[in-house]
Length: 557
Image 1: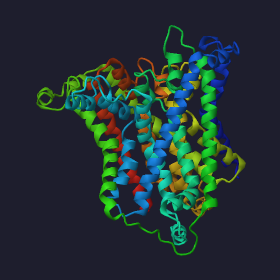
Image 2: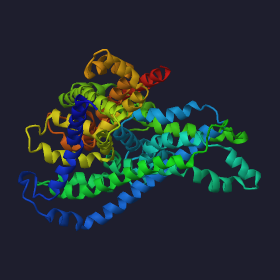
Image 3: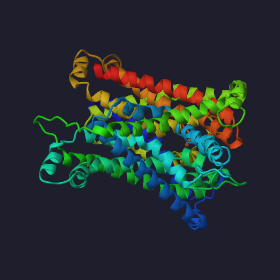
């Protein structure tokens, strides 16, 4: 390794190490401190107070039920859809692409709020229709419950589980199942003794990843759990630092350490499960063609099920938001609703100074933050792929570490740091926290791009006398340009919809779209919320479509 490369590696380790380890170390130090203004006055009292709180046991039970229930729901649905898509002749398989990509365009907060608009017990649109149709005095469905939270979070995590399980299902050698059936085993026996055991690493990896995401989830518990007084760890932590005259950041940090430790262990388990997949290889160099199962009379009913899922995940949530944005208050669709429709909520949103400032701040964070994040990701991915050293391995571990950080916890850690600096309550602080939290989303696409660039191209440039930075700028960067574009748009999309970090660090003057939408929900301004939500979805949709286009173009080249 040249001296320049060695310096680059250690500089990147210092930068990425600061972004990923600083909030963790500050969270640890804060958990032993008296408070934000008494940092350094160490005490173990915060741990005692946090873990002896009588309410904690109920919160932990709620968290376990929510996380495991939502993850199981996502994984089972993903197995079902993966099997239909990769192994059967179900029509309109393009619907599966919609289920795996389109939900990414809908921010989690808006997805949860859209279901609150439909199924809240007081004036939810679906509940109003059901009460009118069947003459009920009370709403039959209450989305503000642990069951409602599991349902919505499960739908949100379904695309992630599907993207993990579907490739494994598609690569499965069905001759093993055929051999089982020839030996006299039935369909269920074959599924239990052949299919599921071989797919076990992918299924467990998908389940573990869903557990990590559900444990870190703040949007669904905040939008659906808080109104129903169902607290999980994420909302319980936020209440510690947002309610009362003296928010207790030390107690929140003490409890946050346990959540962070659990998330890191789960990510380690996830990586071990994905690495274990090589032990279950069923495709070798011999000819292979996956068999397609004829569904016969079940084709149409199963397609209806898939179509219903598309409605539940895409059409109904977005339609509910747009419909509500045109009305002064919630009402059943009909002649009266049509007569009251107007663009008044949209007009008031545009003339709201705080909302426009939040939109401006979100765009600044998305454009500038994503650009800086991709620049850092570019060099980090380059070092990780091209330099096979222990230092490069350390850098790879640091870049992936933040993937396991729950946003609400990492936000508290950064709060402990930024409150000691002039960066507190500024967009710069939020930008640094965003980059730290979402760095893996920039590094991963670029890592895949760098793998396809042969080292001979760089060596030829260096033989001609070009320094390393010139080689990077004139040779490497143009070759991985589609990967750079995909990484930038992915990070920008994450930044513009970010909630869990923002809700901790945002202050008057540094509002962002997700926090503003949450404020509208707290105030019951559903029309303005829906109008702003549609704007947010349009921004996210444009970015995701651009990322998909760039990814396809990259594959062609």
